[in-house]
Image 1 (cartoon, rainbow, N blue to C red):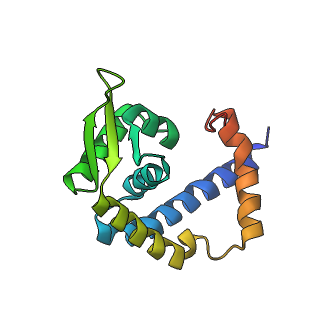
Image 2: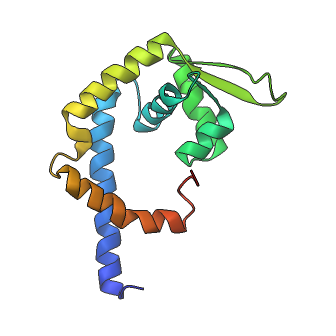
Length: 148
């Protein structure tokens, strides 16, 4: 592994970068009454075939605790961006589906995020790829990637 000073400096840098990006991105989605977590959930639903997913699948994809998924989805339901219904294929499960309003909001928020390069405008596409590659082993070791 790395020597302590290098590891400490690297950890601090990653944590700080996370704070910077989260603040910038949250500021952009805030006018839509979204947090980045809620935005991610909406994006996930727009990419699903039927526009709906089980709560457990959302948690799996976003790598968050079931309680967090429930809170996130319930906030989206309150805002009229998502609807919930019992999963016909599973007595206890719940399906979350994106509403038309949800699709409008996620499209508008995505346009705004693209306009500010998702906070990564200081890098070009190649550099973004490098950063992704550098962080990947850490995430793989934490089982953070789907096997797909």
